[in-house]
Amino acid sequence: MSLKTLLHWSFIFPLLSLAYYFFGIVDDNAWLATLGSLLLISSVLAAVHHAEVVAHKVGEPFGTIILAIAITVLEVGLIVSLMVAGGKETSTLARDTVFAAVMLILNGILGACLLVGGLKFKEQFFARTSGNMALISLVAIVVMTLILPNYTTTELSATFSQAQLIFFSVASLVIYSTFLMVQTVRHRNYFLPENDDEPHAEPPTNTESTMSLVFLLICLGVVVVMAKALSPTIESVVHNLGAPQALVGVIIAAVVLLPEGMAAIKAARRNQFQTSLNLALGSAIASIGLTIPCVAVVSIIYEMPLLLGLDIKSMVLLALSLYTVMLSLSRGKTNILYGVVLLVNLLAYIFTVIVP
Image (tube, rainbow, N blue to C red):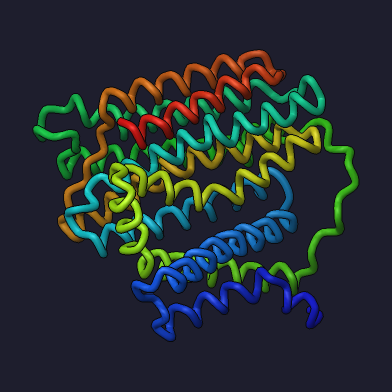
């Protein structure tokens, strides 16, 4: 590997972030907090860059799976670190972040892909079967983990008992692992891009792939420790703005999903909407299907309360988003109207978080 490669930003910024953390620069100074936030975002971008290098090496659909799992590990690390640091005050953080991730993916990333692809190509085509498989898996996990807690009677609040939490965590893992098996083995052809005739860059060497894998793991650790250090600053900013605590979950989800959203939009601009769809829906399933079991383990170990049930307003917005996406993907081709409607749904969600 050349010196020029090692001096790439994706190698430098995670190391700068580590130095920022271990030298104890984090404090209440606004400028230093801003610097730390920028380093945190750069580490997230670096993590996904290295995931993309590894993904390019292994090919599709394994590449999008690696990206989805990397994003989910980032999300889980952020949530768990903030839960452990915040204690009982963060009982709704996992719910808010997972719900925000699902809403941002369904309405934001998918809506932007539909709009960008529709503006450039008028219509784009994809395998309806792949979208149906992903949506069936997503709807089942969403209903069981975010809506059902409101209607169980073992606990009085919008939460599960320990036995229920274990059961539905295992159920989420079963659904996600089955979806992965279908995506990679049984029906892999449904998830492969049909119009993949654009020139591709040469795959990275074994050395480059190994280095990216090592730095991917480093970046994931850096993001977790940086988020934990900066969590008081994030929460104080939200409090000073007079915004609801749920906005913290939206901020976490937005930071984590930004790079993958960019990758999905780039694919739509290359007329590879199937890849965009794999990235978006695969990330949504991984986000909720892996995050809920992980935070359930933390909740049980540390005996922390974990509120998962959504309020009525959120359930209405979630139902609207899922129904709109189902109709948008029902014909196997896209246009800009679907994208505009989904993006308006996203604005309605963010507005009602800030002005509940």
